Length: 384
Image (cartoon, rainbow, N blue to C red; front, side, top):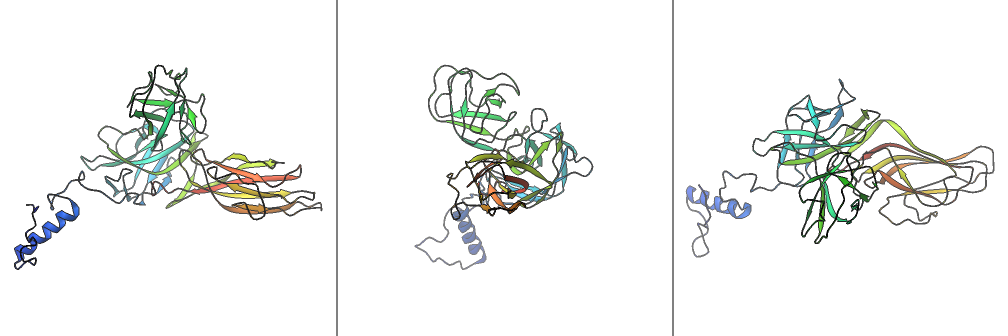
């Protein structure tokens, strides 16, 4: 049963006088507000959901095989496209060291071979059956406008792409791609020529770089989404893990807040200089996150009083002063034999390569800069 015509247009009495008339009026109002032609049986194809919604679905190292397995708690999230709701009613476990298979205590790797790298944990869903599962992928679920050279090898420029060797990408265009690149085909990022904003691709993981020829036109787009199993048509990133030393690094999660169980000393530099330096932290790559870091400036015997500033690489590099640096710590000038310390703990947004900027106001042979990484805040697609 459906109502698509106003049962009480302006020319007649607008208030229902019978129960049946009231039902007809309610049907019409629902149809006008929702756009559904059948108010009692709409499909997900008609529906839209609150994008970014996520609760629960907490990740943790599996107790039986912490080296390779991740537990995923119950919860619910909207898919990255905002078209499906993904509900996990029973916690389950996925294995990083095995090719994906449906169900708990089964493989979770979407494609390729396991490596020391960042893996993004994506919930996935089949709209035909409603089954929800998860995959581990080196693809963060990002898309951007890119450019491509015609050369041997062809070089893709994608600002702050966050991809690593073994990540895969699909190219599309409004015009024509260079010869050697086919729209809709999956290509693999290789280590050769890989920078934070450029990379080369191969037709196979770890293969030879593609040579591009001919001409090109239009606007090109690169997309690096997880490789979904057959019939799965929606995904949502739940978080990101780091495999290092052939094991998943141990962590704990509380909502958007992740912590390493053991902090990592990422920098211990003597006489670090007074110019801007990019610092790489032990954190997931492929996403912008807020790094939780502990910083110490140590000044030995000398008369200088160094100030350290720590900033996001996306903002302007500014000279360090007592009132101009965004996040700073100052070591007092020291003429004694005991080193003076300044310590700061806080958050700095990273680029997708897990990097931030440090800069000191002054430095000499008695200056030390130390950075220890303890955790990060990951919005997990809430704002995308």
